[in-house]
Length: 311
Image (spheres, rainbow, N blue to C red):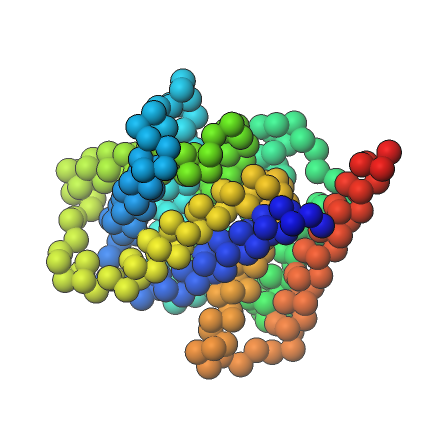
């Protein structure tokens, strides 16, 4: 394994560990503020931070779309509007078990990544990668359900919540896959422009929804009540995670990178354990299966690449 590839893995781990903590963090915040205006405050701040950094690092010319406005708008809207709106609305809709359901559904992203890559780029996955992703997803479900599948569907709105979260996960996969179209750009430039265009979509959607009476502008008390969650979501799960994720995926490739999303629910459960949750043997087996699947796929890819280089 080269140092550069190892760096890509570390960056992906930083991103998914940061995102793994966002579901437990968001659980109390969603009781205070709707996920739509929260998204505006979160990613609006992230976009401003990225823009300031890009301006100082690459200058004004870096803000030009170079004829890629439509792509940047689509990918940015998918990630910074679609993902946050749908996933956190689904988490809120699912009720008390929302954070668990949302985190486990992130494990579906590797499968969605294979489908998007196949449709968008015509890249067929290897049998080993496909099997690894399926096994890893099974391990995650074991961790979350503890053998009781009713955890995933009990509740009046759980099925609807699952659909919302699944669509949100698909939005992030589209964004991740789209990054491959901008290899000539710096990661900072791609992250900044997509976040800006995505936030513009958020603003338009919120303006219409508020004008129609579907949403109301949060009060100062609500904003103050979610300040802690906002700090975490802007810094760790926002600027740091988005930049690390985009750079990590550029290094190791989107299909390999998306596999790391299997660790998001594991991280969520580790946080719960630290807070006093007692892990069962069934859950421990699920964690082991997920990690082994990821390691096995990585080893296979390394061996396969080595054979190609030698030939």
